[in-house]
Amino acid sequence: MKITSRFAPSPTGPLHLGHAYSALLAHDLAVAAGGTFLLRIEDIDQSRARPEWEEQIYKDLSWLGLSWPEPVMRQSDRLGAYRDALNSLEEMGVTYPCSCSRKDIQLAASAPQEGSAPVYGPDGLVYPGTCRNAAFNVGVPNAPAIRLHMAKAIDLIDTKSLSYHETGSGKHQVMSINLADALTRVGDIVLARRDMGTSYHLSVVIDDAAQNVTTVVRGEDLAEATQIHVILQRLLSLPTPQYHHHRLIRDDAGKRLAKRDDARALAKFREDGLSPQHIRKMVGLSD
Ligand code: GLU
Image (cartoon, rainbow, N blue to C red; front, side, top):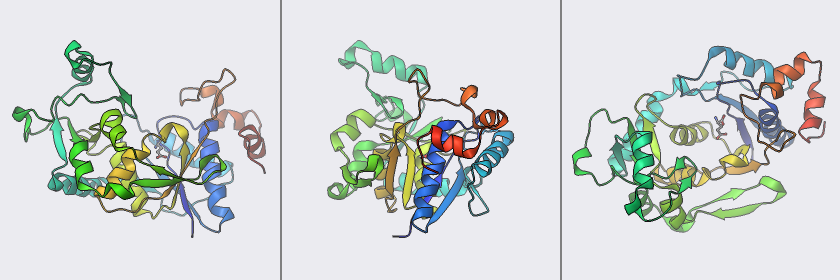
């Protein structure tokens, strides 16, 4: 198989050691197999994306010794493709508009009549379904979000083949999607926010397919989201790539690195005179 991997950062802050690990791993995997490493800029959240962070991404990755084909795919240029996919899902009848605010969701999920403790899934609090059956909400124009009706979605797909190949942690395993979990621990995720016209889940699935990505390399914090991605791939008749979820790089206290941890920013290490080889060593990769 000819490998195409990708690194897909959001330009919302400086890249840190965790990003370096992800990018280097994706790059090394592709190059070792004579394949292609792609870079994709995930800038659908225009309220947080900044051109200066995008510039910094190119600079940091080039400094690490990575290269990629141009032009780089930028998600803010792809809104038409996301709209088409959303229309297809709407035509299948597996979506509904949702006008709940974050606060509404919190209140509904913790209401005593729900009877059980709120459940947290890949996107945080699992949506309690308030707008799912609300007759008043049918066709609400300008609803702030469009959600996936998970139960209807599962009914529409061939659930026998609902799995993906995981190659992280040196193993190769077939991971089955647990349908009961998809209903209760994932639920009706947001497919599109009105202000963005899409969501992380929808755009990542569309773009991995559009770029013929065969191997998705990303942190294990995103492993839970993969079940959503596989379900969307089946609904939209898109291929499912292999997934390689890697360990997270943590700080000295064992805390996962975040963009706000400027002290761990690659640019900072570069200014301090470290070399790309140092960075490779720090994240546990060989030269
Ligand atoms: N854009 C996402 C991030 O920066 C990564 C998405 C992915 O690799 O699937 O966390």
